[in-house]
Image (tube, rainbow, N blue to C red; front, side, top):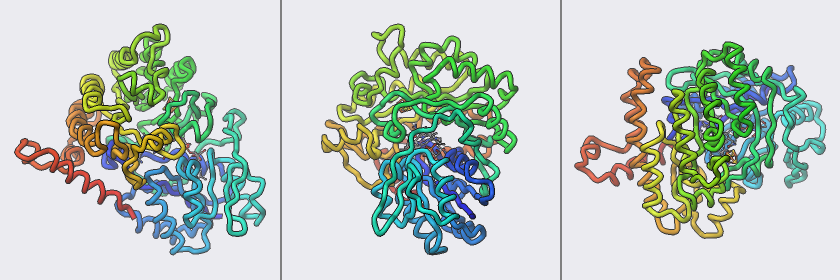
Length: 496
Ligand code: B12
Ligand code: SF4
């Protein structure tokens, strides 16, 4: 069968496609795990986000798929609906399969779209079994993790438990299936690699617990190193380790750094996401190893620097130094950041502002922290994704102001606090964050001078979109610039 796998083109403010275009890890993993006689094409539509209609039309005509699979996050649901309609119009007989976080956690919404199958949770084995059933015209009854239509209604087969990742049943990704090109992180080709799946924490805003429960499974180092080599052989010079929480087992992470160094794969740049407590606790041994292994950017889930907010986010434990639990999270965070800085790494600071109890002062305290300590701010607003505990609380308190899901991109405030309107929260964050981003340009220039020289004007224009010379010179109220920025964002969301 011909199988076309698509990831959505929708991007958000902190990932401008001019500078960052990453492959979707799910699709190449699915491509590596279907039976080998199928012909699979993977198209990450972020690579042609301005020509989505033309690209999908061309791919369907040239490739003539029997099955089209879409990987979808919640804020991409509207775009996914439009792409499904387009694919159907081009080839009515095609089987449409959806998977990923949104179809899993809001499967009822996909029942209303023109979709044939929903793959819930991890997809490799379920999708493999689905293709087998389709080509043999067999029933899908026994396929765990699958929802399908039967006699005009939806049947949801039992869940598939998370895979333990140990027996080689999940084969490595197939990067050769990608048919679009142009992945980049500031001019260097980037790829994604998994070393583990899952997390045992239960932060209230995170979708992962409902997606797969609280567990942590790891791939062997042999497999991880082979995967990194494969990414490099496909041209990657930067690797993003997309593990949910690689710092859950710090000793393993240290051993992985050593393995990367010994395998000579430390010539690549690495990006990773980590927990502040783990880095604060073990940073003295971990951070030098990370640096030697080639880690350059660490996305730190700081979440918030205030105790009340951390409690709301259920993120206190992961932000507390273990050997001194009375230390405020703030100290753990500063310690983690210091450790990373001393070892030459940059901190992408993940903060969440606009929680129910937030006032303008508490938001400002977080922004001031980001200004002082982080190299690249990644400040978001709490976003009520399907079935998270946080969503239930926002619903119960009547604080959700916007239900247009395409705006659930993390940097659009769709909830208000008890004290501050949603739009005000977003305005304050937007206003501060643009300038913080600018400060990282010299460091980026030193690493990738040609890219920055060529693209600095467009990067600046993106960061300050909505602003004019008059607003930058403060001859015009920033709120006008903010309104223009919001209008541009609205237009940008029409991808199809
Ligand atoms: C790495 C990552 C990123 C990376 C890279 C994204 C990329 N290009 O791959 C970056 C940092 C760029 C990113 C950004 C964002 N992310 Co993100 N990200 C993740 C993370 C940590 C891991 C995803 C991953 O690659 N996993 C490995 C792959 C193999 O697993 P998988 O994606 O789950 O896919 C499996 C199944 O879902 C399924 N499947 C998936 N797609 C399909 C399709 C088909 C057809 C089938 C059959 C099966 C299937 O099978 C796959 C294999 O088992 C997740 C999860 C987490 N723990 O927080 C969040 C997560 C996916 N991100 C999320 C969000 C919201 C975002 C942002 C909007 C904001 C943000 N929080 O930063 C932006 C938007 C990105 C953009 N497009 O502009 C949310 C999604 C919530 C939701 N309900 O939609 C998650 C769940 C985190 C959370 N907040 O809870 N993200
Ligand atoms: S530590 Fe990270 S991955 Fe784990 S539940 Fe919290 S936000 Fe999600």
